[in-house]
Length: 597
Image (cartoon, rainbow, N blue to C red; front, side):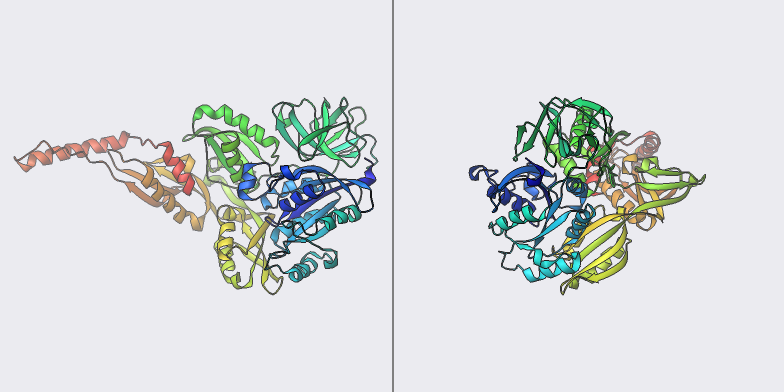
């Protein structure tokens, strides 16, 4: 189809504002999916996406639409995730589009991730079509949503389309707006053909399937193409698009999105955001390629050590369609061989672990999540540390810098005091507070990344009864009084339980882990000391009492001195046993402690 009749657009919104439901209605209205095949969340292919009601992967689909002017248009939609952890998916998808549908919930209004996603779209120079969704709800407030569009996002309210994706209201207006308002794609004018890789996935029969948007020239089977980043030259075997299932096409032309296969067997050869071009006359690299930097690190180990190779292959396959996941081999005295994995955030980490369990049937254990610290040594050299085991000795450390995030918290006005107390508890500082409307305020604050890892988002939700939302972005590093907390069992340091914590929180965390270890370490014939230590100073201690064998059971009657003699002998034996005895900690103990840490 000629470029003038092609429209490429994404759907962006805060999580749970109805993106996927709207894409369902668009598929139905354009006749892309027959009514008998239609199901809710049609583009969410993963069980996890359906269960949680969230989009994890961007899903492309090509639709044919005959507009009111009688002409046929090709609409290429990319349904994007809404959660902050998958912002990279969103930015890549937007780089393959000219327009974006911005969905705002008529009942909830503009939320934290709405603001973040709009800024991403504006940065890419996309035309934004605002859609106020869920107008059929009894507590919908369209006037409030329009006011927020103007005041918070600076988007004219009279451009907004009123819709209800669930009831099918306003769907035709949205399709007409896409045709009229979203600009048609234009060739880049490069010396040879160009295409942007915006995603990829692994197919057992076809190998690596690359999702592309053609920006110059055309792609068809039999052509040799070069991947600029890896420098690899391959021959295209098949080209096609999605409707939403893949179907084969003769060629992909300027402005069209689809997929290509090219006998690429190893996931690492394809980099998302890379440019495909002619090997004989390479064109320049398209904007959009950037290496993704993980924010949160965690160790993933197989529960059965024999599964190490299977886990390695599973993570490599998963990494193919999740370019933000990074991993490298590491070993632990307690857990054996495993992988140090990098994630964009805590939800991302949770999803990856769940996918490994479900899609690849792996029994895994994950260690306590940590972030990357920068350590300046006394000789002036700076090193990055993402694992407490690699922390230099305290005598060689001049300063430790921890990553800080700039967080935007939107909450109802009546909860502002509790949210401020929470931010203060998490060692954060509030930079400014804005009143968004009569009900809500937005606080901008700086918080150490380490503090928002576990329960920060959940605490905001519980304080605000579900009405609060947050978004964050990296804000560099700041010097902090961090210490390495070691756990000693019978005088031996257990690497698996070591962590980097702020000095003010070290004692309470040490007590928590020591108490948990006391519950899970089996009792021995001698007393076992569990200690939490910073350097050489013990800050918390618990003791697992000994199992006492009744050595006086055979003494009935007679002189007391006989019993005393046996008890003294037992006491001497226990001293000797404690001196040479090592405590065997079962794997269940590690799993239990890591669950609660």
